[in-house]
Length: 126
Image (cartoon, rainbow, N blue to C red; front, side, top):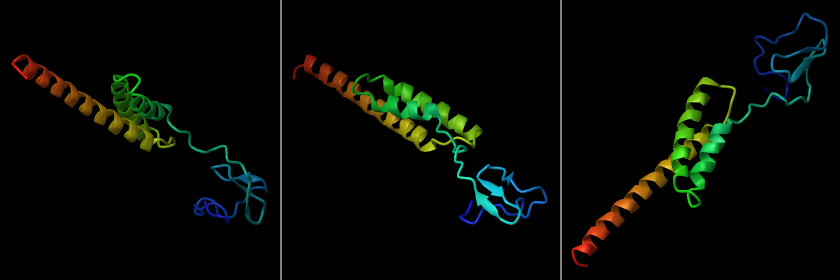
């Protein structure tokens, strides 16, 4: 879309129908001579709720460390959904939730491995 009317003018050239005809996206109205913005913005793409849940789950790991697992799983599911639903937004949230969750899981695994290693070392004489 441009300020002068719909950007896809190939399907929206002068309309032979009566004035008042709306563009396919509902944002422009044909007045008989030109396209006029309707001011209607109700067709904004929604954000995938699982993508948001993925990021939130990955970020609350200080409260519950296993929430990062939920963040990774929800990130994968929401990325698949977004691939199948081009009308939804939120890929950035999904990727961020997946990456942050994965980083937290790797850090948690390293922390546990180091703690186990140091625990065995101290039993054999620190």
